Amino acid sequence: MDYINTLFLVGAMLLCASILASSLSSRLGIPLLLIFLIIGMLAGVDGVGGIAFDNTSTAFMIGSLALAIILLDGGMRTRVENFRVGLWPAMSLASLGVIISAGLTGMLTAWLLDIHWLQGLLLGAIVGSTDAAAVFSLLQGKGLNLKQRVGATLEIESGSNDPMAIFLTITLVEMLSSGQQSFSWNFLLLLLQQFGIGGLCGMAGGILLAWLVNRVHLATGLYPLLITSGAILVFAFTNSIGGSGFLAIYLTGLILGNRRVRNLQNILHVQDGMAWLSQIGMFLMLGLLVTPSEMVSIAGPAVAIALFLILVARPVAVLICLTPFVFSWRERLFIAWVGLRGAVPIILAIFPLLAGLEQAQLLFNVAFVVVLVSLLLQGSSLPLAARLCKVEIPPQPEPMQRTSLDVAVDGDYEVMIYQLDNANWCVGVQLRQLSMPADARIAAVFRGSQLLHPSGSTRLALNDVLCIIGSPKDLPALSRLFSRAHTPTYLENRKFFGDFILEGDAQLGAVGSFYGFEVPPELSELTLAAFFSKQFGGHPVVGDSIEWEGHIWVVAALNNDLILKIGLKLGSGSGKPPMGFL
Image 1 (cartoon, helix red, strand yellow):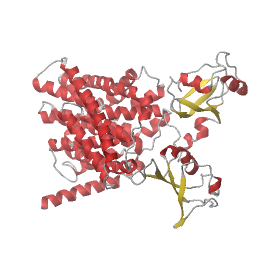
Image 2: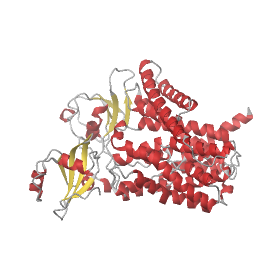
Image 3: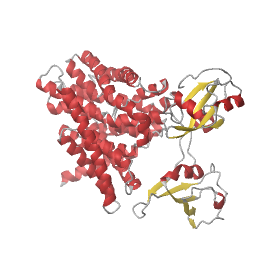
């Protein structure tokens, strides 16, 4: 009993310390996940806590479960409309990109550490994939609103490239354990098996879980538990029949998050907490597992391998994999930089330890240093990199909170909460003067502690809190009315999109006549939307820009692939042809 109480005491203290220390992340510019890792190291055998933890089997089990929950949450938050611009580039990076990164890093590792080339390739496979937990956490935690093409590619890649890294790692571990010296055709068969079974099980699991959640009537708090337990069942079953469980649980989350599922918004709130708990627990445990004093002797080569991976291997992989796709050089540069390594490499580095391979401890220590360097160097510089590469766009206004009503109401309705500030033009306006969506209603207005029952003559005041019932499709229109995004100065609409916003259906000839540049006769009848859509490969996203006729043209609003509005920044030149992405 004393042992259990001590375990609970230490675990709760570490968890509380990690949560409280998270407030230091934004102040110090240190990635949040790195803080969790450092706290685990400080509590470990070489730190002030002196806790000796070397149970690799337990670490692998807990880490795998935590990763599964994180991938489920990441899949549920990935919008299927992002596949329009990000699916195939992400798949290229998640497959061929991992192989290229692993191969290049493996060759350097074998040479630097003077080990067998298969052992070097094993390390390359271990650190070859970007980490979903790191990418999801850092992109959301830094509040970056990236261009859809870039953000979608990074999210889908990080959620789907773990199966390739796991497959390569397991294959190489088995080869080294059996003394095999070369690859065989079984390699490709195993690859097809892992991805094929994982994909089928993930899609089937997602559809079945969505059907089940919508058919059974449970207490509100049980729906998130049903989805989590069901998704872990899919994960475990897929692994047991030879498929990729990580791919399966990501696809399960993707289907659940993009279908009409009962109580989805509330489920996402709970999933968010479970994903944070998984990340904190996983990084604390991995920090406890390592022995920092053992890394001193290999720090130099390990840092060199990390820098090579960040500055050479990842950029080369991105350059090759994204060649067939429409990305600007700035977008490619940013994607190359956001090759974040996190918990996955450390967990994969446990495989050689469990198999008892020669040099297993060396590979584990090197992988850990690579993760530290990646989180510190790449993670802390994400906002600066996004700004320099010009891949941020002005954030969209959103409500303070959203709560689904589909548990009690047979319809797609939510309660959306807004608070008015000085930037809202509707302050001082009567409700009858507002142009709201037809199916939306203001249910209540709170003014301080006073509850008002709104009528058409109610005049809105500063700091009023509005409770609005509406459909998710009305969210953009309602947010434009009652919310204002906190936008950095350099992303303000006029600076970003230009001084003039033109309609996408305007004809080139008319626009050229008005702004004083000549349009070739064969182009004069084309609309702005049709002309510029071709310049962006048929799949434009908000924020895409080109220079044409001496002016900068920026996509300002879209409906799927149809350009609705284009921003115009007037320049001094003229007569220039389209220059491609800026």
